[in-house]
Length: 112
Image (cartoon, rainbow, N blue to C red; front, side, top):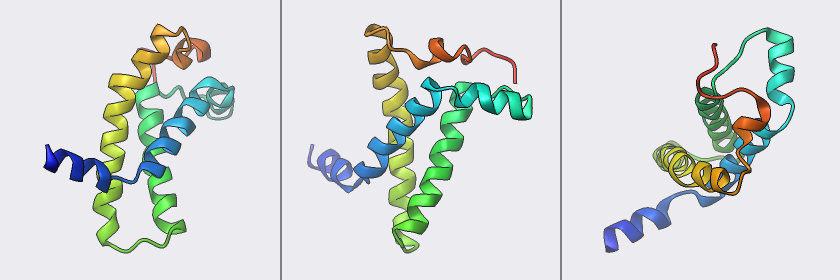
């Protein structure tokens, strides 16, 4: 139990929470339809979230002036956020009928 607690406290929770919020904002707004109009490319939701997380992780790394040792922490936070987002947040929004995937029209099964 102590190992789990140490692992959870070592994660970058600022990154995790803002990453999840940014992902939902992008998936709930007209950004996906604007991107499709500009590039004529549909990107599945899971890949949009992946690209947002990686790009945002790089931005956080550069803006906060982290050294090489913090890359592992950011990567672990990214993986934790992806799993937490998929298993908890998406299910919660589905139960509350706030699923951003249904609102944008681009779900995980759309063509790329």
